[in-house]
Length: 322
Image (cartoon, rainbow, N blue to C red):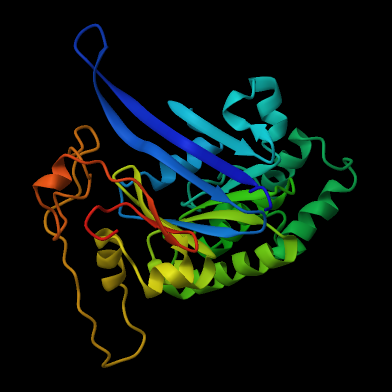
């Protein structure tokens, strides 16, 4: 059996909330709680869930843009969370991120040639003379051209800016990319273009990707496997074809029931969840989804469900359906 490129085990991230005159910690935000999953080389894994479920925090913690509270992240034989600062900087060549907001992620005072040259200079890639050629090649990979080298970010549309952000992530030739909701800030008409671009790049460059998203329709089309999170915990995971055709967890069923149907006149029973997602400062006891679950009873408040294998790598954390 091939060893996964990325192995995440029992990842946990809490954010302290200071209070009082002395700044003592009065509470903690449980952003990510006991998350474990693997990503195979060349695989695209979707990470989905409502806002506040911990998706972005997982992605940022893997790259050590946020420091994990506990757990392990093993990337191609390297323990990422144990790397000292001097080694972490060079290791970042292997793992890059595409940020959600194409407007905020680019320096408005720099031209495109400088934005894309910085990673090359930082990691000593190429000579000074051939960096311009490398930057032009990057632009062409994402559907832009050399005539746009000396333009500033404000001179581009949102979709074009995101293409520049993708080019910047590719500049150091990483093996793994975290795409943090890369199309959610774009017009619907542009989203498909960017998704198709990412799909082509994954195939052409052999990239491995963690694709964080809200749009489950996009995830079904683009991702090999899907991980569903709720309030910091993984509640279901599996191959896209299995999870979409036979969702097991009540939360996954509710999410999929909200996906619009492409065929007019085709009706689908909608599962409407009651209430709002609870606060991660004081999550419910037992199953974190029980306060909104239509199947919940007294037992769900006492037992923390674990992921059970349903076969073929499809796992679900629900004591009522597994």
